[in-house]
Amino acid sequence: MNKSIRSLFLATAMLLPVSAAFAADASAPADSATLASVLKLTSAQQEKIQAIRDAEQKQIAAIDTSKIKPGVFQAMIKSGQWDEAQAKQRIEAVGDVDNQVTYIRAKALFDISRILTAEQRQHFQSLFAKELAAD
Image 1 (cartoon, one colour):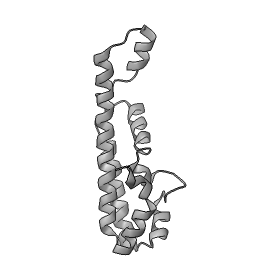
Image 2 (tube, rainbow, N blue to C red; image 1 turned 90 degrees about the vertical axis):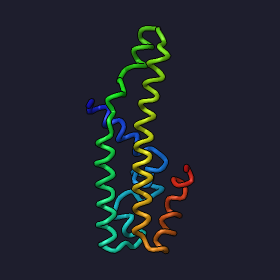
Image 3 (cartoon, rainbow, N blue to C red; image 1 turned 180 degrees about the horizontal axis):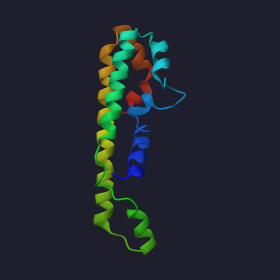
């Protein structure tokens, strides 16, 4: 798989609304340590959350991006010829990967929320209200 495409999608995944919970963004706790202190997580909860996040990253890394042909639009612009079928195929392939990443991220957030106490869950929801509102 093209390493630059994988990197692009991993970077893009961090910009998705649901994934903003783990993005390096000042508006939300970005790392486990910050999340742990804000939610007052126990060490057992922290270990479970880290396992979820590790699994999430492995799943995202395993997404097949081979159907995404790099340079399709650049080639069309350069040649001056629009290819509707190729354009749609490229957009669909990107959309498929994007949907898979969104699903994995949303599932990880759900799994994390199940580890939390009712009070922590309420605080978690308020911390990520903006990201969860994108649903």
